[in-house]
Length: 227
Image (cartoon, rainbow, N blue to C red; front, side, top):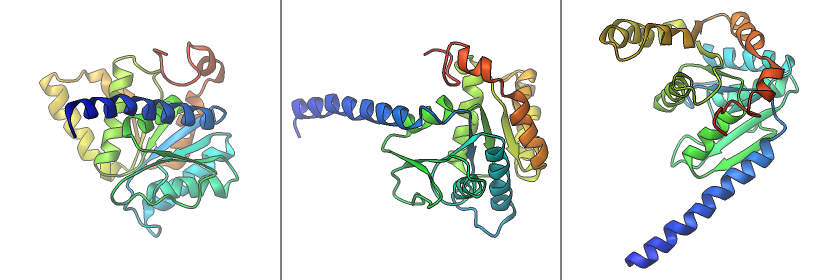
């Protein structure tokens, strides 16, 4: 491939990216209020966190929230399955990956993405809260991106709820004892996070923080502040 062909291919890629944005925005425009639930694709159905994610998703669905997951197995499947259990709106934002990402069968609305950054935009755009179960690098990526966007006032501050004190406790200790101690983040940044093992508490945090009037009129239809 010569340089001219490469440049032409890159230019056309822009239209493919635009198409992903347009298609997803059209499919998801009526799903609010919604909660994005994250966690490991490797979590098995017979484990504690899978069952907790399923129960919490069902509870939030009964409260009128759509449930958005990454569309794959593990915690993502549990979230979509819980929404389906409660006859709520179950949404999967699926990504093309070489492994781990077979779409689960519990999605009512299934959106497919080629580009991670388009998919991540949709998680933020339509969410009024993030609930984050134990997971790997992808889960950590979503966690820290949400905190960065809130910290820098790029999105409306919404709850970021961590489920699993045994799993997340060491990370929060590191933030407190090392990052804050070194001055790389501020002490009040810890206020952006909620840590709990109690599903009732998690559901109440999501419910009590949702202000429909503010969410729909504060300069955005979603959480983004710079639209």
